Length: 158
Image 1 (cartoon, rainbow, N blue to C red):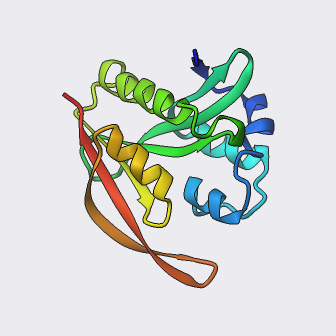
Image 2 (cartoon, rainbow, N blue to C red; image 1 turned 180 degrees about the horizontal axis):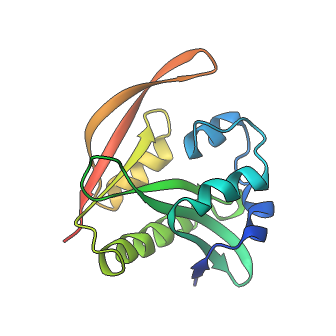
């Protein structure tokens, strides 16, 4: 499938906010939000990030993510990755992440990209591995009173 991309616009969040199908999926996207999240909450976070980008299938939003620096760390982090339920398993996530890796390298000069992936998000872990990310650390996160391990992943940008 041929996708295009562009910078996110505030009105895009009316559809993006519907991508997480439940509280767990929203937690994977951004643990601080409560389900269901509002478009305004998403826009506020996006405004503080670097290169917030949407992937499009014609004019329909297929996926979204952004970049951000981590305080006291080298490189950049990929954040708020989410794919429309309609586009899952169709290459949208892979296409968007490849675009973001290129943008991080060529537009921002990043020499390292990291992201956080929750250990129970198997589909995402497999996608990130396919794109060359490897685990380097983990942290314990609490979700609705439960405990789970979150695997942080890293990729060196050549």
